[in-house]
Amino acid sequence: MTSPDAKNAADLIITGCTALVHDDHEQIDFVEDATIVVRDGLIETVTTDDLADTPAAERIDARGQIAMPGLVNCHTHAPMVALRGIAEDLPLEEWFNDVIWPIESNLTDKDVELGAGLACAEMIRGGVTCFADHYFSMDTVAAVVAGCGMRANLGEAYFSSQGAEGRERSLDFALRQRGGADGRITTSLAPHAPYTVDDADLAATAQLAGEHELLVHIHAAENRDQTDTSLARHGRTPIEILQGAGLLDVGLLIAHGTGIVERDLPVLAGATGRVAVASAPRGYLKFAWPTTTPVRALRQLGIPVGLGTDGAASNSSLDVWDAMALTALVQKSTEGDPRWLTARQALHHATLQSARAVGLGESVGSLAPGRKADIILVDLSGPHTQPVHDLPAALVHSARSSDVRTTIVDGRVLMRDRELLTLDVAGIVDQLGERVPSLIDRSHGRKIQDYDA
Image (cartoon, rainbow, N blue to C red; front, side, top):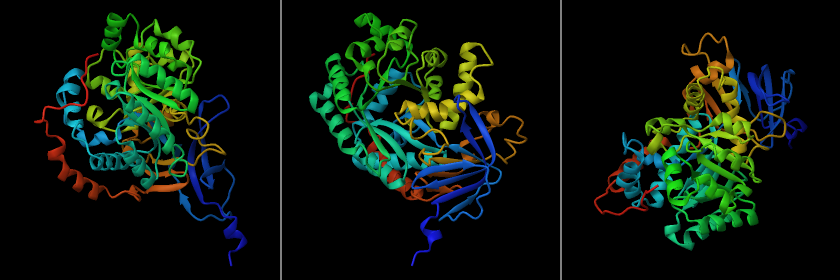
């Protein structure tokens, strides 16, 4: 017979932590010696009360650790970890045309499965609880997400060169898979970019997104060269092309946006849909792009800017901790102002703003009652973080992804004390190693698309 205590027990109680919370004005704050109670996958309370007598199925003693909302990777191509380091030190056109798109013509579902599994392991270990993925064979990625316990927004990418079938396949995936993995999977329509998807397909995508209440995840104004080329060819910037197609009137996640120019700002200000931008600064530095995502200008418009990594083939990493620190540093350099972006602002971008960017701003991104229990525990006891004079600065500029000790999604522990519980990394690496020779073969002369933007 089940005892009353067992029946009413919390699923998880975390004690003794310092909890990163958002106050009523959405500023970062910290609650010392906090206790977090999780029930039915949700945060029930964040309190300083002594709940030692409260029954729980599992307890974690987090003394000396920081409890944070799980980080959100707002834009990536998870299976591309299989191509990490394959195309280094190249400009974007050569990167795409000479290496990446020829190799991607070899992709099998098994390659995608193994790449996605390795990516999820990397992200869990780095404190990422949710990611937005834009790639191919996404049913396979969805199965990996379901199995490993992460949260994800997934979109099946398509080009207009695939004909109507590409767009229809993206819609079919989005409708079939949304709400999957016990609600941990949400979905997007995923046209690749304005330079690979024509105006008619973009307009059709906007209409479908409105009809089915789907987010649209697209690369646009990735760099200034693309904007200049678009103006020369069409007389419109990539952002103006999105506006003309109706995509600013639906939920829209724009990847990169380093080519957003002054004339785009009033266009974005007039958007009637929920528009957000994902910034992935490491890739911009590697490609030597002259500009970065205009975070300050976008924030002044009320547009959320989330943090992403892009794929590991360009970034070499899926480390959102790294993206958070680089965002703060690059913004200081770009703006010529050491007071912008502050560590507290960077933490806001990595948590609540990133959650909003992927359409989950009401359910994840902060530690508060009723939110999903997506929680990470960070250990700042290492020599590289001590002494802690300024906690936000220590988290952004001193801590590393390897300081994440525990990762929790929906109240389920996916990593405890650095031990992954839901993925076999050694097995994935062994299988992927066997597949690499056939995956990277470019002797066939095929490629999935031409880059000319």
